[in-house]
Figure: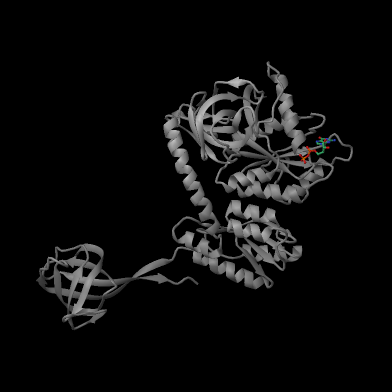
Length: 521
Ligand code: GDP
């Protein structure tokens, strides 16, 4: 249902980027979100008082044309990660706020790791430049070490100096967001279909009942539409924008507060518009059952090395994400360096999405759960509720005290993740001398094994006059005299039945072969 076809290329129209603001505590995320919101009220004729509905849109002018940007109004990476853990990717661009008087701090690094793990481009807002002790150049230098190289130094990350408090250069930040979106993302959606999107925030309002702020991702949401949002459903009675004003419709990337739902959905759950109320109720009920089952299943899921090996076999995963924690920075670096040297070819990749010194925290587990990563603890233990949470989320934490042991195990897992390569090994041939018709098990070929051996569990190929008639089939039976045989050797007679193939002829040749795994060095 969700993620249905969006139609043809020409049905897609540009949509605004959706932005999340992240960064260290007290670096000014909330202040920046407030400043951007209120700065935009001036641009709006109505000039109503902005409300916190969970997301808002601003307009700015870039190269002479009006461009819109949607901000998720919950600062921090917790909400972002919680949504990702539900499988929702709400954010197109992350704004990383760094206070210029404080520089890069632990949660700055955490935030940028979250954004990188989600493959979301980052714009850096160097905040508090009104302060005399602000040192924006230092921030640029520090972040370069984390792979965010400023454009002015030849990199591809835009850094913008701002002051949320003095409302300095907010336009510059908006422009950088638009330019980053234009440079690295192709943000388009079909506005002419039933709406789909995400719940950003929801609560029970005493007067209005359940209210949910949704972000339209595709299509256009209209008053009167029947929708299902997570396990909640209902007909849209009214929609309000971030100024508390009634709106009739919401197009892609537009946040809207929806009234009329029967229950309160969860943040990060998706919504879809369906034909009518009856359908909405049915889907919601099914979803609720599925959600419950999924919650139970999730408790059983373990994100383990073995899981990765299994999912690799089925082609689901080519990437092993790791979070490294160690007692001292030297050991973390040594671990990461050695991991980088593991050669697993191009098919599989190993990503260290976060690393750090100290105990394994709940935030580490959070990121691991959202990114399907496993945590490597080197001479460290979990703290607080981290173990409990890892159990609940099915995140594996592996502990080591010897580096080479960690490397060996991860290397083995990665090699296991490589799809095995097989080669064909011919076992032997038999010639069909007589045919016995049996309605029960199919035509039986009476054969003489002319070379090698025919095995019961081998694959067989049928050759007629030098041409291959059947490329690969199983044997339904192999007998020597009246007894079932596991193999029959050269010079002996046997009776065999090829599964699913009855059109055998005298003089046909049956070749037995096996697929053997080619060992990797
Ligand atoms: P958050 O924890 O990242 O959301 O940070 P806040 O937005 O709550 O800001 C933390 C403190 O820094 C508050 O006292 C803000 O007033 C102050 N602050 C935020 N932005 C600026 C700024 O640009 N300049 C100055 N001087 N102070 C700021």
